[in-house]
Length: 147
Image (tube, rainbow, N blue to C red; front, side):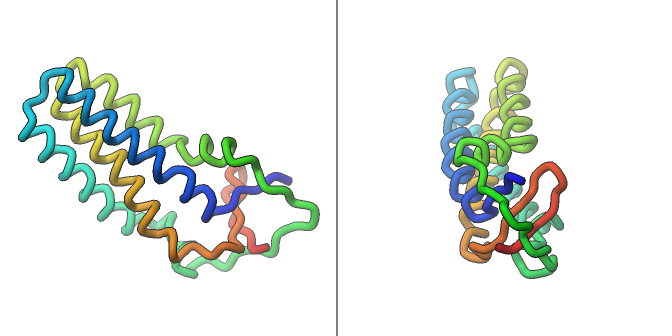
């Protein structure tokens, strides 16, 4: 059985989301969004998603609200690239696809979605200290284990 480290996933996905967020802000400006509205949209998206991320019930394991199962014998940790890729699905990839489409329709919306992406990265960084290093996650079954 291959599991993911919840802490390592957060460490891996945070910089990816932050960089993508800035990339979408740059794309928004290149697509014609005015600097002021683009920056305001980016900040609103960023702060809005950070607020919502902390209200997300899926984050309950980070605060001790889920009793993890003991990890089965013989489990192995997924490679870093596999953990990062799995952490991007669906939120990071979904937001990025929407941002790419919005660049043709509403560049300011692209900046907002860039802020959302960056905000997901900020939320991952902010939750990092509360994630127990012993927690492992099975993304297929959505089960949390403790080493």
